[in-house]
Image (cartoon, rainbow over all chains, first blue to last red; front, side, top):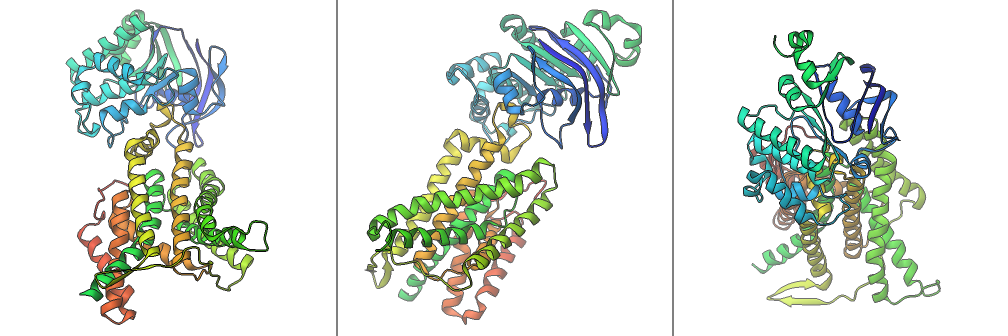
Length: 240
Length: 305
């Protein structure tokens, strides 16, 4: 479904991705792992067609979803028309809005107008958010903010959800809980997930397949279980 | 006492103009983190547009020859619409290309300053330096309330400023577009990820701010029928300072700041030699900023300009 072919991307004159290719099938969980600066976040931002200066400029290759190229699309169209969105690194929730407002705002481009029902669904998934619905969202704890970031992304009715470092700064229990919820969404609703993680061990346990990035290139790929047991990957990314 | 109350009414009217302009500054700043220094001149353009629309409709030998009442009711929306087009054009032609190229905000602010000068001098070149007067659109009625004389126009100006403020408050807090405006002011990176076209939110902000400035220009032209190309410069600067003192980015701040500045100005002019006016006004504002660097309603932010 999602096909990335020979993608090159740069920040100014500095090339950050040197022609990477990968593909993700509908209903799959795919993870991109790699060290700091390998180009994982850059890949996600390029996929979302976000603009500079925070995001790279695509200088070569192509990104297609079901054969449609995303290269000439603005980010909001990728969300509205393709049904793909990103829960960005650092969560980036709208702290000056309440939890409820964050969720309502994300329903901007929904075709189906039943926002209340969609919000109830999010509250079922993350009951903690329901308790805090009227609260300004910058008063939430880190874990709750991550739930809101995911809930907000789901409100766009996405079929493909990109997650950038979802486990960052979370307590282990909350982290496992969140991944369980994501896995459930994948199994029950067929949500396609692309997860970028520093915590490679965790990501590979959840994912079906994985790609390993190193300085802007894909250096290894395969089923997640197999990557977990490959000695060179164990040594480089999983801490021995 | 009566003299004081009379001055209060004058301050309310004068403050309404500052507030109407300051709201536009604060809206654009809130959404784009851009100080739109051309905004005072957009106010000037609004006054001139009102002049041309009103004289065009009124001219007895012209195509319309409308009554004064009808002219007023047509001039209000037309001035607001045309002025908002001017604001949107500035955004399209001057600011957006720079932002797209990822230029630092400082360059956009300088561009805004230049746009203001272009509007002033373009007007000067096109229409000459002669002052123009808006024809009277409203029969003057003077109400005596406990010895204080209030004209109907003064009342309308004050009512208009309050109504605009309330409407703006409702838009920003209750509508989805207002929610998006607040969201952009917090984090513009994440907005497109919600499927929201950022540029539409920005254009909407310029439409709102410029339309309000246009209304201010019309009311100003009705109150002080002496239009000149530089009328927006000083008034615009003062309104900008009023917005900063109120806490730029905060709608309440712009409103309160506008009235505060006018109050100080009018009272100094009333009780002291009028040459002291600006000195006192700005010293007061400096003192407020010294006490509260982010303004009366502002919250500290990591990056300004």
